[in-house]
Every structure is written in structure tokens, then in C-alpha cells.
Image 1 (cartoon, rainbow, N blue to C red):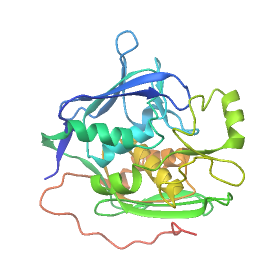
Image 2: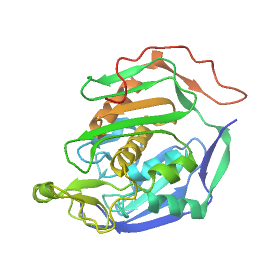
Image 3: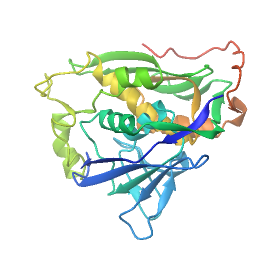
Length: 302
């Protein structure tokens, strides 16, 4: 049986927020079984908190933001993707500030700190959202869907007109090892021509070549180049894994994404939660259910 997990100890990460440019501190703190994942603003009076859940998503433009009537926390997806990969179910994310630290633009800083403190199993079973029928969002031009699968698998395609990106694809079964090797090092990216417009909107105030891949019209500006030939799509898969955590429970299914961003992922999560006839609750014991055959309307790759 897969048991719920939390951290063995406290992990602390400090750094600037990508969009705010303000120094923040994030602490991963152990939590009891059946607690879930909660954001806690320790810099505010009374330390208000909010569960990480789709009902508390406040924005999906450029990054995912979660909050309540007292606060909003932005850029949560890199942190949450790491928790998903490590199968961490119960944790308090104590934050001094309104944005998760960006690190180097990837999930590596979260991966490294969680590995240092380690995880521990708790005496309660994991309760999965187990997909039993396909669930679709979008159109043939841009879509996201999930189909039955005995595990968690991401198939992601992006298509940008920029000569350094073009069409890229990745297909990965999610576990701690594949995440650490294939997704965690992949950095967020942006275009130089958009930076000035974003800063006029109060966004990307902390963005730099130290925490993002930056492209002008023809080339990548970072001196070290790319970490992977298809680093761009790897980062999109990293983002998607984090956004799926807003389901409130671990997912078992195959998620297929074509030109999908935070907004479409949020729509897919909302549709999964609103489609109880397409999934069941599963506690893993001796074996997995037998999958039925099904048809899908689009391939995940053009």
C-alpha cells in the first residue's frame, strides 16, 4: 500500500520572487496525516492559511496564484511540482512574502532542499483521483485532456514560431527519479521584447538571466545556453505537474497537453473535479484495476 508522506524536518529557501522582485522566505514544514498542502502567510497577523486547491486559484496569467480574502501567493507551480514528484501529501508551506522564491527559474532549489531533509511515511493510505474515463478541455488547436492510466504520465507538446523553440515534445512517467533528471532542471523562459511590457504591468520585476532563459528575436541570451535541447517543453511539463496539485489529491492518469498553459490546466483540473462519473477514489493495496480501451479525439502531438 502507498502511504501518505510528509517531510522529516523543516526545509527553508530564501530568494527573490520572479514577478515581485522582492526577497521572500519559504519554509516546508511537516504536517500530520490527512492535512493536505496548505499555504501559510507567517508575515501576516494571525498567520492566515489556505489549502492548495482549485477552488482557491486566483490567477493563471503567466503563473498560478492561490489565495483567499486576506492574501494571494503567486508562482506556486515549481514548488508544487516538486511535492508531487516526491509524493508529499501533507506539508505547511510557510511563507514570508507574496510570492514563492524563483531560485534559478527551475525546480532544482526545491528538489535539493527536500532531498536534504528527506521524507517519512505516515500511517494513512494515499487517496488517489483515479481516472476511469477520458476528460477533455479545449479544441484541436489547443487542448488538455486526461485518460485512464495506471500511474501519472505527462505528454506535452509546445509550438512557438521562434527559431530557437519551434515544436517540442516530451513524454514522461512521473516519479522522483524521472522528475529529478528530466524536469526539475528545466528553467522558465521569456522573450526580451515582452519584458518592458510586463514590467509596466508590475510583472517580471525580479526576472534576469540568472533565473530565466531569455530570448531576443534570433537567439538565446544566456551565456551558458540550454540545459536540454528541448528545455522549453520540459519546463512546460514541470509547470503542468505543479498545477495538477490543485486537484487536492494525487492524480492517477495520463495527461496530454497541446499548447496548453496555466489557464487550460486550471480548466482541466476544474473539469476533473466536476466529473465524478469519470474518476474514482483509489487506495493502492495489492493491485491496480484493469483498464478499459477508449478513444481520444486528438493526438498530443501535431
